[in-house]
Image (cartoon, rainbow, N blue to C red; front, side):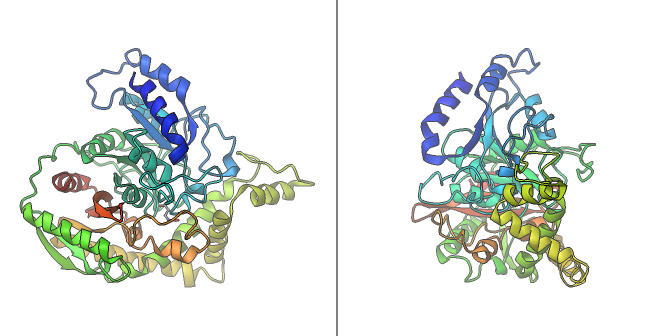
Length: 448
Ligand code: GLN
Protein backbone atom coordinates (compact mmCIF):
# COMPACT_ATOMS: atom_id res chain seq x y z
CA UNK A 1 0.00 0.00 0.00
CA UNK A 2 2.84 2.40 0.81
CA UNK A 3 4.55 1.62 -2.49
CA UNK A 4 1.31 2.09 -4.44
CA UNK A 5 0.56 5.38 -2.69
CA UNK A 6 4.10 6.51 -3.47
CA UNK A 7 3.71 5.94 -7.20
CA UNK A 8 0.36 7.73 -7.14
CA UNK A 9 1.97 10.71 -5.42
CA UNK A 10 4.94 10.67 -7.82
CA UNK A 11 2.62 10.70 -10.85
CA UNK A 12 0.59 13.58 -9.43
CA UNK A 13 3.60 15.75 -8.63
CA UNK A 14 6.06 14.78 -11.38
CA UNK A 15 4.70 17.34 -13.88
CA UNK A 16 5.66 20.07 -11.38
CA UNK A 17 9.13 18.85 -10.29
CA UNK A 18 10.40 16.50 -13.03
CA UNK A 19 12.66 14.71 -10.56
CA UNK A 20 12.79 11.17 -12.01
CA UNK A 21 14.53 9.85 -15.12
CA UNK A 22 13.25 6.27 -14.66
CA UNK A 23 10.49 4.74 -12.55
CA UNK A 24 10.79 1.20 -11.24
CA UNK A 25 7.10 0.64 -10.58
CA UNK A 26 6.47 -3.01 -11.41
CA UNK A 27 9.52 -4.36 -9.61
CA UNK A 28 9.06 -2.05 -6.63
CA UNK A 29 5.47 -3.17 -6.04
CA UNK A 30 6.48 -6.80 -6.39
CA UNK A 31 9.37 -6.36 -3.95
CA UNK A 32 7.11 -4.59 -1.45
CA UNK A 33 4.63 -7.47 -1.47
CA UNK A 34 7.36 -10.07 -0.99
CA UNK A 35 9.47 -8.55 1.76
CA UNK A 36 8.84 -11.47 4.09
CA UNK A 37 9.96 -13.91 1.38
CA UNK A 38 13.19 -11.89 1.11
CA UNK A 39 13.73 -12.47 4.84
CA UNK A 40 12.97 -8.90 5.89
CA UNK A 41 11.62 -8.50 9.38
CA UNK A 42 8.97 -5.78 9.45
CA UNK A 43 10.42 -4.37 12.66
CA UNK A 44 13.61 -3.34 10.81
CA UNK A 45 13.45 0.48 10.95
CA UNK A 46 13.51 1.04 7.17
CA UNK A 47 11.52 -2.03 6.10
CA UNK A 48 9.03 -1.32 3.32
CA UNK A 49 9.98 2.33 2.94
CA UNK A 50 10.33 3.73 -0.60
CA UNK A 51 13.59 5.38 -1.62
CA UNK A 52 14.82 7.16 -4.77
CA UNK A 53 18.31 6.69 -6.17
CA UNK A 54 20.52 9.21 -7.93
CA UNK A 55 21.09 8.01 -11.46
CA UNK A 56 24.87 7.64 -11.11
CA UNK A 57 24.44 4.69 -8.71
CA UNK A 58 24.29 1.47 -10.69
CA UNK A 59 21.16 -0.65 -10.39
CA UNK A 60 20.99 -4.16 -11.84
CA UNK A 61 18.81 -4.35 -14.97
CA UNK A 62 17.51 -0.82 -14.33
CA UNK A 63 18.51 2.05 -16.60
CA UNK A 64 21.42 4.06 -15.12
CA UNK A 65 22.29 7.15 -17.16
CA UNK A 66 24.36 9.47 -14.94
CA UNK A 67 22.27 12.17 -16.62
CA UNK A 68 24.19 11.66 -19.88
CA UNK A 69 23.33 10.81 -23.46
CA UNK A 70 26.50 8.70 -23.27
CA UNK A 71 24.61 6.22 -21.04
CA UNK A 72 21.12 6.68 -22.50
CA UNK A 73 20.64 2.90 -22.79
CA UNK A 74 22.93 1.54 -20.06
CA UNK A 75 21.44 -1.26 -17.97
CA UNK A 76 24.06 -2.40 -15.45
CA UNK A 77 24.57 -6.11 -14.84
CA UNK A 78 25.14 -5.65 -11.10
CA UNK A 79 24.00 -3.57 -8.13
CA UNK A 80 26.13 -0.99 -6.31
CA UNK A 81 27.02 -2.00 -2.76
CA UNK A 82 24.66 0.64 -1.38
CA UNK A 83 21.81 -0.96 -3.33
CA UNK A 84 22.53 -4.35 -1.75
CA UNK A 85 22.56 -2.62 1.64
CA UNK A 86 19.20 -0.94 0.95
CA UNK A 87 17.69 -4.29 -0.07
CA UNK A 88 18.96 -5.88 3.15
CA UNK A 89 17.34 -3.04 5.09
CA UNK A 90 14.05 -3.83 3.31
CA UNK A 91 13.87 -0.55 1.40
CA UNK A 92 11.99 -0.26 -1.88
CA UNK A 93 13.87 1.57 -4.70
CA UNK A 94 11.13 3.36 -6.64
CA UNK A 95 13.22 4.95 -9.38
CA UNK A 96 16.27 6.81 -10.60
CA UNK A 97 16.63 10.52 -10.03
CA UNK A 98 17.71 13.29 -12.35
CA UNK A 99 21.15 14.86 -11.95
CA UNK A 100 23.73 17.00 -13.69
CA UNK A 101 25.57 15.04 -16.36
CA UNK A 102 28.15 12.82 -14.59
CA UNK A 103 27.44 14.95 -11.47
CA UNK A 104 29.13 17.99 -13.02
CA UNK A 105 27.07 21.01 -12.13
CA UNK A 106 25.18 22.73 -9.37
CA UNK A 107 21.68 23.14 -10.79
CA UNK A 108 20.78 19.83 -12.51
CA UNK A 109 20.56 21.87 -15.73
CA UNK A 110 23.42 19.95 -17.39
CA UNK A 111 21.27 16.79 -17.43
CA UNK A 112 20.73 15.43 -20.93
CA UNK A 113 17.17 14.39 -20.03
CA UNK A 114 15.15 17.10 -18.31
CA UNK A 115 15.15 20.19 -16.10
CA UNK A 116 14.17 19.42 -12.53
CA UNK A 117 12.44 22.22 -10.63
CA UNK A 118 12.88 23.43 -7.07
CA UNK A 119 10.17 21.91 -4.87
CA UNK A 120 9.30 25.35 -3.41
CA UNK A 121 9.23 27.39 -6.62
CA UNK A 122 9.04 25.92 -10.10
CA UNK A 123 10.90 28.87 -11.63
CA UNK A 124 13.99 28.12 -9.49
CA UNK A 125 16.71 25.47 -9.83
CA UNK A 126 16.66 22.51 -7.43
CA UNK A 127 20.43 22.79 -6.99
CA UNK A 128 22.72 20.00 -8.02
CA UNK A 129 24.17 17.81 -8.96
CA UNK A 130 21.74 15.68 -6.87
CA UNK A 131 18.83 17.99 -7.80
CA UNK A 132 16.39 15.17 -8.47
CA UNK A 133 17.28 13.49 -5.16
CA UNK A 134 16.54 16.69 -3.22
CA UNK A 135 13.45 17.90 -5.10
CA UNK A 136 11.75 14.48 -4.91
CA UNK A 137 12.14 14.35 -1.12
CA UNK A 138 11.13 17.99 -0.62
CA UNK A 139 8.07 17.57 -2.85
CA UNK A 140 6.93 14.61 -0.75
CA UNK A 141 7.30 12.11 -3.57
CA UNK A 142 9.52 9.94 -1.38
CA UNK A 143 10.77 10.14 2.20
CA UNK A 144 14.41 9.49 1.38
CA UNK A 145 16.91 9.34 -1.43
CA UNK A 146 20.57 8.71 -2.10
CA UNK A 147 22.76 11.33 -3.70
CA UNK A 148 26.48 11.77 -4.28
CA UNK A 149 28.68 14.68 -3.26
CA UNK A 150 32.02 15.54 -4.87
CA UNK A 151 32.06 19.27 -4.11
CA UNK A 152 28.66 19.90 -2.52
CA UNK A 153 26.17 17.93 -4.59
CA UNK A 154 24.23 16.54 -1.62
CA UNK A 155 24.45 19.55 0.70
CA UNK A 156 23.69 22.32 -1.79
CA UNK A 157 20.49 20.79 -3.25
CA UNK A 158 19.42 19.83 0.28
CA UNK A 159 19.85 23.50 1.26
CA UNK A 160 17.99 24.78 -1.84
CA UNK A 161 15.04 22.46 -1.11
CA UNK A 162 14.86 22.80 2.68
CA UNK A 163 15.77 19.21 3.58
CA UNK A 164 18.54 17.31 5.39
CA UNK A 165 21.53 16.09 3.37
CA UNK A 166 24.63 14.31 4.65
CA UNK A 167 27.93 13.82 2.86
CA UNK A 168 29.65 11.25 5.07
CA UNK A 169 33.39 11.06 5.73
CA UNK A 170 35.42 9.92 2.73
CA UNK A 171 35.60 6.15 3.18
CA UNK A 172 32.46 5.77 5.33
CA UNK A 173 30.20 4.52 2.51
CA UNK A 174 31.27 2.17 -0.27
CA UNK A 175 31.44 3.71 -3.73
CA UNK A 176 31.47 0.35 -5.49
CA UNK A 177 28.93 0.94 -8.25
CA UNK A 178 29.01 4.73 -8.09
CA UNK A 179 29.87 6.03 -11.57
CA UNK A 180 33.13 7.82 -10.78
CA UNK A 181 33.49 11.57 -11.21
CA UNK A 182 36.50 12.51 -9.03
CA UNK A 183 37.66 9.50 -7.07
CA UNK A 184 39.52 11.34 -4.30
CA UNK A 185 36.37 13.37 -3.51
CA UNK A 186 33.20 11.38 -4.33
CA UNK A 187 30.96 10.11 -1.52
CA UNK A 188 27.43 8.68 -1.51
CA UNK A 189 25.05 9.97 1.17
CA UNK A 190 21.41 10.24 2.29
CA UNK A 191 18.84 13.01 1.73
CA UNK A 192 15.74 13.03 3.95
CA UNK A 193 13.20 15.37 5.50
CA UNK A 194 14.32 14.78 9.10
CA UNK A 195 17.63 14.31 10.89
CA UNK A 196 16.48 11.04 12.44
CA UNK A 197 15.54 9.51 9.07
CA UNK A 198 18.92 10.59 7.79
CA UNK A 199 20.73 8.87 10.66
CA UNK A 200 18.78 5.63 10.10
CA UNK A 201 19.68 5.68 6.42
CA UNK A 202 23.38 6.30 7.07
CA UNK A 203 23.32 3.36 9.48
CA UNK A 204 22.09 1.21 6.59
CA UNK A 205 24.68 2.22 3.98
CA UNK A 206 27.85 2.63 6.07
CA UNK A 207 30.66 0.17 6.44
CA UNK A 208 33.73 -1.41 4.95
CA UNK A 209 33.45 -3.04 1.53
CA UNK A 210 36.18 -5.22 0.09
CA UNK A 211 35.14 -4.04 -3.40
CA UNK A 212 36.03 -0.39 -2.64
CA UNK A 213 39.68 -0.01 -1.65
CA UNK A 214 38.99 3.52 -0.35
CA UNK A 215 36.31 2.35 2.09
CA UNK A 216 37.43 2.43 5.71
CA UNK A 217 37.67 -0.53 8.03
CA UNK A 218 36.34 1.36 10.99
CA UNK A 219 33.51 0.72 13.40
CA UNK A 220 30.10 2.12 12.47
CA UNK A 221 28.29 3.50 15.52
CA UNK A 222 24.49 3.70 15.70
CA UNK A 223 23.97 7.23 14.38
CA UNK A 224 20.56 7.46 16.04
CA UNK A 225 21.98 6.81 19.53
CA UNK A 226 22.89 10.43 20.27
CA UNK A 227 19.55 11.90 19.21
CA UNK A 228 18.55 13.08 22.67
CA UNK A 229 18.36 16.84 22.18
CA UNK A 230 21.20 17.32 24.66
CA UNK A 231 24.30 19.13 23.35
CA UNK A 232 25.43 20.86 26.54
CA UNK A 233 29.16 21.62 26.47
CA UNK A 234 29.53 21.02 22.72
CA UNK A 235 32.30 23.22 21.30
CA UNK A 236 31.31 24.82 18.02
CA UNK A 237 33.44 26.94 15.67
CA UNK A 238 32.26 29.40 13.00
CA UNK A 239 34.94 30.16 10.37
CA UNK A 240 35.05 33.87 9.62
CA UNK A 241 35.80 33.07 5.95
CA UNK A 242 32.30 31.54 5.70
CA UNK A 243 30.60 34.75 6.82
CA UNK A 244 32.02 37.34 4.40
CA UNK A 245 30.29 39.70 1.91
CA UNK A 246 30.27 36.92 -0.67
CA UNK A 247 27.46 35.33 1.36
CA UNK A 248 24.03 37.01 1.09
CA UNK A 249 23.32 39.13 4.21
CA UNK A 250 19.98 37.35 4.86
CA UNK A 251 21.81 34.02 4.87
CA UNK A 252 24.38 35.33 7.33
CA UNK A 253 21.52 36.54 9.53
CA UNK A 254 19.92 33.07 9.42
CA UNK A 255 23.24 31.49 10.44
CA UNK A 256 23.67 34.01 13.27
CA UNK A 257 20.21 33.03 14.53
CA UNK A 258 21.31 29.39 14.45
CA UNK A 259 24.36 30.35 16.53
CA UNK A 260 22.02 31.89 19.11
CA UNK A 261 19.95 28.70 19.14
CA UNK A 262 23.05 26.56 19.71
CA UNK A 263 24.18 28.81 22.55
CA UNK A 264 20.72 28.54 24.07
CA UNK A 265 21.08 24.76 23.97
CA UNK A 266 24.25 24.97 26.06
CA UNK A 267 26.93 24.85 23.35
CA UNK A 268 29.83 27.30 23.19
CA UNK A 269 30.36 29.04 19.86
CA UNK A 270 33.56 30.86 18.82
CA UNK A 271 34.86 32.45 15.66
CA UNK A 272 37.84 30.69 14.03
CA UNK A 273 39.79 31.00 10.80
CA UNK A 274 40.33 28.61 7.88
CA UNK A 275 42.78 30.84 6.01
CA UNK A 276 43.33 28.59 2.96
CA UNK A 277 39.68 27.72 2.34
CA UNK A 278 39.46 30.67 -0.05
CA UNK A 279 41.62 28.71 -2.53
CA UNK A 280 39.25 25.75 -2.40
CA UNK A 281 37.38 26.50 -5.63
CA UNK A 282 40.56 26.78 -7.72
CA UNK A 283 42.08 23.67 -6.16
CA UNK A 284 38.87 21.68 -6.56
CA UNK A 285 38.28 22.51 -10.22
CA UNK A 286 41.84 21.43 -11.07
CA UNK A 287 41.76 18.20 -9.05
CA UNK A 288 38.16 17.21 -9.84
CA UNK A 289 38.54 17.91 -13.57
CA UNK A 290 41.85 16.05 -13.72
CA UNK A 291 40.38 12.97 -12.06
CA UNK A 292 37.25 13.23 -14.21
CA UNK A 293 39.27 13.37 -17.43
CA UNK A 294 40.88 10.10 -16.41
CA UNK A 295 37.69 8.40 -15.14
CA UNK A 296 35.72 9.32 -18.24
CA UNK A 297 38.22 7.69 -20.61
CA UNK A 298 36.24 4.46 -20.30
CA UNK A 299 33.37 5.95 -22.31
CA UNK A 300 34.84 5.10 -25.67
CA UNK A 301 31.73 4.15 -27.66
CA UNK A 302 32.58 0.47 -27.33
CA UNK A 303 32.25 -0.68 -23.75
CA UNK A 304 29.17 1.25 -22.63
CA UNK A 305 26.22 3.18 -23.90
CA UNK A 306 26.19 5.53 -26.86
CA UNK A 307 28.03 4.71 -30.10
CA UNK A 308 28.08 7.12 -33.02
CA UNK A 309 26.65 5.81 -36.30
CA UNK A 310 28.68 8.38 -38.15
CA UNK A 311 31.97 6.43 -38.46
CA UNK A 312 34.46 5.35 -41.09
CA UNK A 313 37.16 3.83 -38.88
CA UNK A 314 38.04 3.03 -35.26
CA UNK A 315 39.32 6.52 -34.52
CA UNK A 316 35.90 7.86 -35.57
CA UNK A 317 34.18 5.48 -33.15
CA UNK A 318 36.08 7.00 -30.23
CA UNK A 319 36.04 10.61 -31.33
CA UNK A 320 32.51 10.85 -32.67
CA UNK A 321 30.93 8.79 -29.87
CA UNK A 322 32.53 11.08 -27.29
CA UNK A 323 31.84 14.26 -29.25
CA UNK A 324 28.17 13.38 -29.66
CA UNK A 325 27.66 11.58 -26.32
CA UNK A 326 29.10 14.13 -23.87
CA UNK A 327 27.51 17.50 -23.18
CA UNK A 328 29.22 20.90 -23.03
CA UNK A 329 30.03 20.95 -19.30
CA UNK A 330 31.55 17.46 -19.37
CA UNK A 331 33.73 18.43 -22.34
CA UNK A 332 34.82 21.59 -20.51
CA UNK A 333 35.93 19.50 -17.51
CA UNK A 334 37.77 16.96 -19.69
CA UNK A 335 39.67 19.78 -21.40
CA UNK A 336 40.51 21.48 -18.09
CA UNK A 337 41.62 18.16 -16.62
CA UNK A 338 43.75 16.94 -19.53
CA UNK A 339 45.37 20.39 -19.66
CA UNK A 340 46.32 20.39 -15.96
CA UNK A 341 47.68 16.85 -16.24
CA UNK A 342 49.70 17.47 -19.41
CA UNK A 343 53.49 17.25 -19.18
CA UNK A 344 54.14 20.98 -19.49
CA UNK A 345 51.56 22.03 -16.89
CA UNK A 346 51.41 19.20 -14.35
CA UNK A 347 53.75 20.88 -11.85
CA UNK A 348 52.15 24.29 -12.20
CA UNK A 349 48.56 23.09 -11.83
CA UNK A 350 47.86 19.53 -10.67
CA UNK A 351 50.83 19.23 -8.34
CA UNK A 352 50.36 22.74 -6.93
CA UNK A 353 46.66 22.06 -6.34
CA UNK A 354 47.58 18.97 -4.33
CA UNK A 355 49.93 21.04 -2.18
CA UNK A 356 47.30 23.69 -1.46
CA UNK A 357 44.84 20.89 -0.70
CA UNK A 358 47.18 19.81 2.12
CA UNK A 359 47.13 23.35 3.53
CA UNK A 360 43.31 23.33 3.50
CA UNK A 361 43.32 19.98 5.38
CA UNK A 362 45.72 21.37 8.00
CA UNK A 363 43.46 24.38 8.63
CA UNK A 364 40.62 22.00 9.52
CA UNK A 365 42.90 19.82 11.68
CA UNK A 366 43.94 22.88 13.68
CA UNK A 367 40.33 23.88 14.36
CA UNK A 368 39.31 20.33 15.28
CA UNK A 369 42.08 20.22 17.89
CA UNK A 370 39.92 22.59 19.93
CA UNK A 371 36.36 22.15 18.63
CA UNK A 372 33.82 19.36 18.09
CA UNK A 373 31.96 20.89 15.17
CA UNK A 374 32.17 23.66 12.59
CA UNK A 375 29.04 25.45 11.41
CA UNK A 376 28.29 28.03 8.72
CA UNK A 377 26.10 28.56 5.68
CA UNK A 378 25.83 25.78 3.08
CA UNK A 379 25.47 28.16 0.13
CA UNK A 380 26.17 31.86 -0.54
CA UNK A 381 22.64 32.39 -1.97
CA UNK A 382 19.26 30.70 -1.96
CA UNK A 383 18.04 28.89 -5.10
CA UNK A 384 18.34 31.07 -8.22
CA UNK A 385 16.25 31.13 -11.38
CA UNK A 386 16.30 28.32 -13.96
CA UNK A 387 18.60 29.45 -16.78
CA UNK A 388 20.01 32.32 -14.72
CA UNK A 389 23.63 31.14 -14.24
CA UNK A 390 24.06 28.17 -16.53
CA UNK A 391 25.83 30.12 -19.30
CA UNK A 392 28.39 31.43 -16.82
CA UNK A 393 30.71 28.67 -15.53
CA UNK A 394 32.75 30.97 -13.26
CA UNK A 395 29.61 32.05 -11.37
CA UNK A 396 28.53 28.40 -11.13
CA UNK A 397 31.96 27.28 -9.87
CA UNK A 398 32.41 30.01 -7.26
CA UNK A 399 28.99 29.21 -5.77
CA UNK A 400 30.57 25.99 -4.40
CA UNK A 401 33.05 27.91 -2.22
CA UNK A 402 31.46 26.84 1.10
CA UNK A 403 31.05 23.12 0.41
CA UNK A 404 34.21 22.28 -1.56
CA UNK A 405 36.81 22.55 1.26
CA UNK A 406 34.97 19.77 3.10
CA UNK A 407 35.42 17.32 0.20
CA UNK A 408 39.06 18.33 -0.25
CA UNK A 409 39.66 17.43 3.41
CA UNK A 410 37.56 14.22 3.26
CA UNK A 411 35.45 15.46 6.20
CA UNK A 412 31.75 14.77 6.80
CA UNK A 413 29.48 17.70 5.92
CA UNK A 414 25.75 18.11 6.38
CA UNK A 415 23.06 20.64 5.53
CA UNK A 416 19.96 21.19 7.68
CA UNK A 417 17.20 23.75 7.10
CA UNK A 418 17.64 27.00 9.04
CA UNK A 419 14.98 29.40 7.80
CA UNK A 420 13.72 31.08 4.64
CA UNK A 421 14.65 34.09 2.51
CA UNK A 422 11.88 35.32 0.18
CA UNK A 423 10.04 32.03 0.58
CA UNK A 424 13.10 29.94 -0.32
CA UNK A 425 14.89 27.65 2.15
CA UNK A 426 18.31 28.41 3.69
CA UNK A 427 20.74 25.64 4.67
CA UNK A 428 22.96 25.51 7.73
CA UNK A 429 26.14 23.52 7.12
CA UNK A 430 27.62 21.33 9.86
CA UNK A 431 31.14 19.98 9.42
CA UNK A 432 32.45 17.25 11.69
CA UNK A 433 35.70 15.47 12.49
CA UNK A 434 36.64 12.49 10.34
CA UNK A 435 34.21 9.62 11.07
CA UNK A 436 32.32 11.69 13.65
CA UNK A 437 28.97 11.93 11.86
CA UNK A 438 27.39 10.95 15.21
CA UNK A 439 28.18 14.36 16.77
CA UNK A 440 26.79 16.13 13.69
CA UNK A 441 23.52 14.21 13.94
CA UNK A 442 23.36 14.88 17.67
CA UNK A 443 23.75 18.64 17.09
CA UNK A 444 21.46 18.74 14.05
CA UNK A 445 18.73 16.86 15.92
CA UNK A 446 18.90 19.26 18.87
CA UNK A 447 18.76 22.20 16.47
CA UNK A 448 15.97 20.91 14.21
N1 GLN B 1 29.01 21.80 -8.34
C1 GLN B 1 30.23 21.04 -8.22
C2 GLN B 1 30.72 20.65 -9.59
O1 GLN B 1 30.10 21.05 -10.52
C3 GLN B 1 30.03 19.86 -7.33
C4 GLN B 1 29.39 18.71 -8.00
C5 GLN B 1 29.32 17.48 -7.12
O2 GLN B 1 29.49 17.53 -5.91
N2 GLN B 1 29.11 16.35 -7.78
O3 GLN B 1 31.69 19.98 -9.76
